[in-house]
Length: 461
Image (cartoon, rainbow, N blue to C red; front, side, top):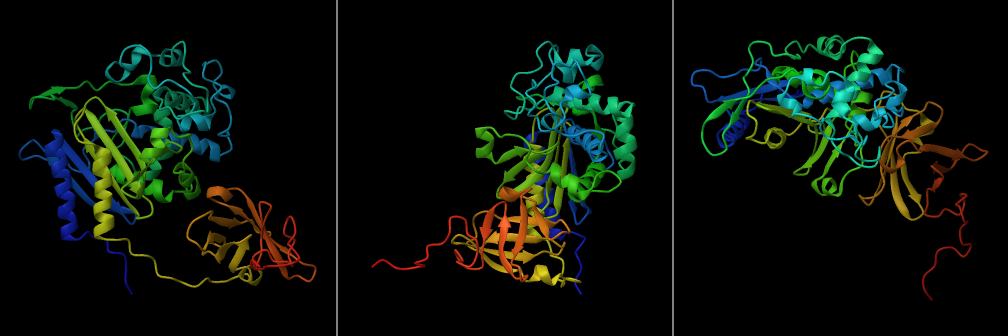
């Protein structure tokens, strides 16, 4: 019996080391640390540094910037799952008087609430949060730049509002709630709002000379839910596992799957680039591979968390420079190296433990008009419907327990599928959101809308 190989092959490990070495050297960053996750645990850690005789390890903290937003999104979705709020609720319902209350909670999570990208006043990333003590100081006099829900426009103040929402509904500071509800259950004891030793210092590297300038590490105050956190490759590796598989102590697998789905209108350029945004997660098509995660930057630091759910491989990249290597590109390459050099070994095929014969008789070929589809039973008790031509509308369906199914993705997401039976119990056709699927193309024995020509099929003559 074969098992999943836990350790990476020597050639794979060398390729990973080579990639981060090139990134640190060409990106001219004081240090770079990285980790790779496979099959639910970290299988590789690497580091490159400009300091001889000393290298940061998996427990050294770096500032992770906007990856903080994903943690904030988890807190909001916990409130939704508990029934405390609905994602379709306007912010005004819970935080009245902000001037941005027409945006819904879902729109704020997906950066489609119409808010400005940054806070007014001095550069908030390099100045103390005490300069912006209230939400009004973060939002300014005109917080909305676009109609809510119309376009994706990345907004740091939007996540400040979400952090304030968490504080209002939990009755405790954002960081306290985060530690209690997410960090402690997941074992992320090296993730914090303020740096804990050992931690890296943040640096700016001169663009035209090999010299450095120390960057300030400010407490962001109200803006903390948008970018405050410090973390390590070890902690973010565990967080990547959670974002892939879920953890019922924090969020279910179904909810983290929802986070990974596009939730915002894409700009034309985003469509070309294959980029989208979910509920607190960035989504990117990179060299044919679908990646989810988040990047982060604050003066002195760059960070990236990249996950390929299909390959079950994730990567974490952290650096301590204001500009230099592109962590998203490095993370995508680390995932690609492992996924291509050591492809995922599938679980053994196993027959179903039990099957409903009334569902089994539905398996096989069906026609929507003249389009051929195949209906299959899935291991989770649902069914799937996909075109035999290889392209067209396809979806998985979950069972509702009453002989009907609900679509999970694509055109048929949320649509109802049911088998319509004749008085004698035999199957007449499938009804999918009013579309009639028959066993033969335009089956004359089924109630095809518009009827079937009584002359039947014929040639030209």
